[in-house]
Length: 170
Image (cartoon, rainbow, N blue to C red; front, side, top):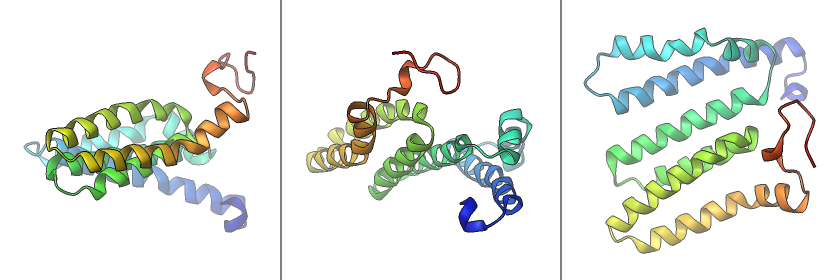
């Protein structure tokens, strides 16, 4: 993105926009989840992210965490849309895509893929949509292939980090 924008100032300005996009999707998530709560209260709760020192610092000093968080919140939004509509199966695939993107930027978000996968399979099996379960498994494996390559072929195991940046236990 830095090469595309051409200057470091534009890159930082671009990063200042990301927390606002996270705020919008967080508000949408809360609106879907808590339909009885007043919109003003949901806006106030959503704006708590602007108090986070991590969000503020990564807005100026860019890091992949912001992208990971953005895609994770979008994935949650599509999950909630599916849960509320229960008929738009395209939201399942959008959830998987955004969760995969979030996991590529911040691998720790990949843990949530198990939660979403189990819930989607449970819902689809209850509706007796077995062919959709097979497609869900195939789509997850397809998007997980780069992670398997990263961990098993390149032998880079981010899960065994010693807690210090750039240092890994063998």
